[in-house]
Image (tube, rainbow, N blue to C red):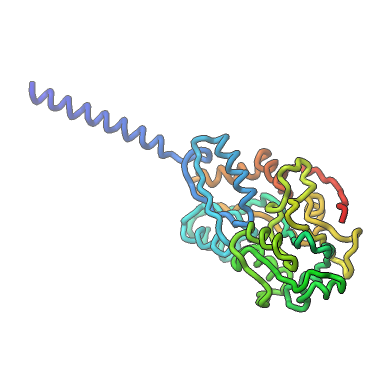
Length: 316
């Protein structure tokens, strides 16, 4: 009898252990809307992704995403070393990178999720808010060093250029698109830490000119998305030799959409998620109707959702 009782006890313990293992495996199953994941995001896009994550977590309560907001040059590092399976970047994969991920059986995918813009901002006391693309190039190259070089009556003094940080995608955009691949190294060019530092610096320094992602300066209290925060003045840019009210454009959604505003770029989700887990689910959400409407409200242009184009001329 003792042997039978002992055998029965062992059998029951085995059954309990099996059931516990089954429960544990169910809880650890990762799906596009269940599980935990870290993602890496270009810090320029933080306002947009924060808004997207808030809604995603609200809808899918069993999914948890931890965002790492990093300078642009760090994004592919963490993707390469398998720290994350999803990055949000303004850069696409190179052919070499695609081959690298394919060799690792990671099936890399790029999804365009939005069209973004680099805004140029100046101090509220600076009335020179109509500039040409060529003038911006000359400022970055050190050929224009005083606001009097643009407007002899200006009282704003020396030009001070401000970026968020030296490794940001904003700096990379300036190098690639405006400086012919040369790194601006003039002493009056300042690299701070984060995007909010740029706004604060320009707000306090009369001669400063800042470069920043447009979502950081969009007025979130304006449901029409036709205004910017009033701490700074947003520059209107012209591709022509002379800037005037008819050929200069601020980074409103309509002008980003129609390519009338000159400093635009595409925002990509790059995912290497062979298990089709939470990173894949969040990528799908970004391209969904809900995800694209959040982008629309952020002040930039959705990649796939219908966009309401409203032409507006601001009072300068």
